[in-house]
Amino acid sequence: MATQPLENTSLEWPVSDFTRVPYQVFHDASLYAREKAALFHGPHWNYLCLEAEITQPGQYVTTYVGDTQVVVNRTEDGEVFAFINSCAHRGAQLVRKLRGEASSFTCAYHQWCFSNKGDLLGIPQQRGVKGKGGMPKDFDKSKHKLKTLRVATYKGLVFGTFSQETPPLRGYIGPALLEQIDRIFDRPIKLLGYYRQRVPANWKLYLENVKDPYNAGLLHLFHVTFGIYRPTMSGRVFMDESKGHSVLRTADIDESQDEVKSVYSGSEKYRPDYKLKDPSLFDVTPDYPDKVTNMIMTIFPNLMLGQVANTFQIRHVRPKGLKEFELFWTYFGFADDDEDAIEGKLRQSNFVGPAGYISLEDGEAGRLVQLGVEGRDPADSSIVRMGDDGVIDNQDTLATEVAVRGFWKHYAASLGLELAP
Amino acid sequence: MTAMPKLGADVDAQTERQVARFLTQYTRCLDEDRLEDWPSFFSGNGVYRALSRENEALGLPAPLMYYYSRAMMEDRVTALRDALTYEPVYTRHITSGLLIERGDDVLISRSDFALYQSTEEGITRLFAVGAYQDTITQENDRLAFIDRRVIVDTFGIQNLIATPL
Image (cartoon, rainbow over all chains, first blue to last red; front, top):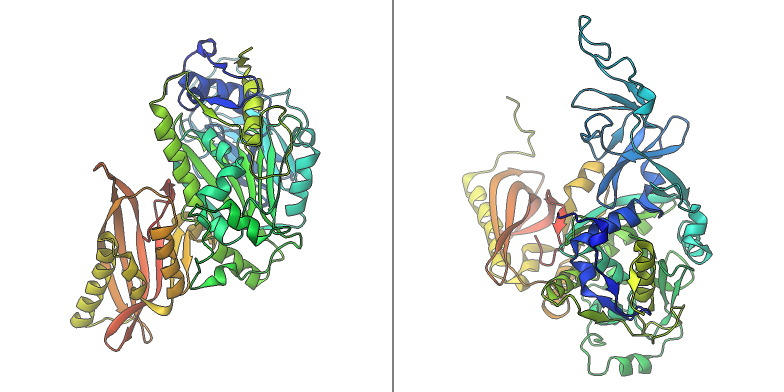
């Protein structure tokens, strides 16, 4: 990975209303370095894990902030602490298991031992051996803590930030999105499992994808034909004040079949003749009475929280270099789900994850765009004009790419990129 | 040396050959792109479930793929042929480590696989390694899976899983 100094980024955004996105953002190594400083280590709240994964004192999980590995753990007094998984001595990876229980952490290399709040507890041979060697007299353990993050939680979602300037979490997320989080996390959740996908694409292509209801009704036949998502449904795209976070929401109301037919005339994506031999996949009682079939929330920079039918998932977009990311899924139900409800969620896992009828196509879309843009001229850019140009604002339609523009607006502002006049 | 825990009773050489042949026919069916025949390896209510080794080790139930009837498997095949957008690849399963024993009225088998994918431009990558845990029924001298559990060691999936493992 080439890391050029920040000032080498020679990107000026070609239009100030973000209806064009320069392809350079998907293959410029200097931008990757700048993202790390400005987004992942800058004044933003980055998703870490769920509180449900560390319910007991001493439990820890590892996660990533950007491509930096971080350990999150619950201490004896019930607080959540997070630190970079790197020893304060010579930098070795400190915690070597992905998850577990520990009240302190000892580095394998020289046995430096740290508390679960990141304080250095002790080092071997500090005073030398047989009166020789050892640390200098002025060595002060209190000055060699692990590099910690500030942590904040909302409804069981754990976020961390390296910056002292990041505003309080609730204000960062904003009221429009908090309401959607409240809807899902209205009762304790139950962890059902994880999925991991290594997608051969820049991480931002996934954010573009899930902020784009235009593709949802055109890429995914399953969405369309089986009524999880159609642009003719009652749908809405809304954002927070910064426009960096967004929600796409569809509900199975106010839809007429004539409209559906006219929208898909000439397309092969709506197939009323397409029937399942075993439709029990859809025979699951909804979890909420509000008829919402699809809800995709993104929290800047790289978290997605979603509902597809009866499935609920966190999708954490973890950059792994410029042209690859891990899509890390945490799949969950609710603590009060009975056996049938759990079985319904396991059945519907066939929609999501690496093999899911809907989600597998999102991985393929990322691959296709990355392949396509690699050879494009640096001056070339994509067109993001569905939903009309002009002010980036909430829209009561699904024929729009406005949330994609919102993402890039907040991205450019966060990185301090110049805009064309 | 500790002996492997027994799954059931020993089987005779003829049964062993019959099961080995059945399992090879399964991977050949997939590798020769005869997906339409894939559901016929299962009994009517047979279950095909792929689980990441991570979830399996943690005791978490979320499956990568979960089909609990032959009809559902036929639906997957139709979707792969007509509906889904994914990269076309050639596949090659290499299997080994076959162990077959007899349980109550069923045969139990364990085997390992490596699955290679080759792109349309002829580049081959190791896509996944894992293990099959099978419960097989013998109906009128024909074998069928009652349950095929695929434990996927390579659960950091390279982009996506389209065809069955």
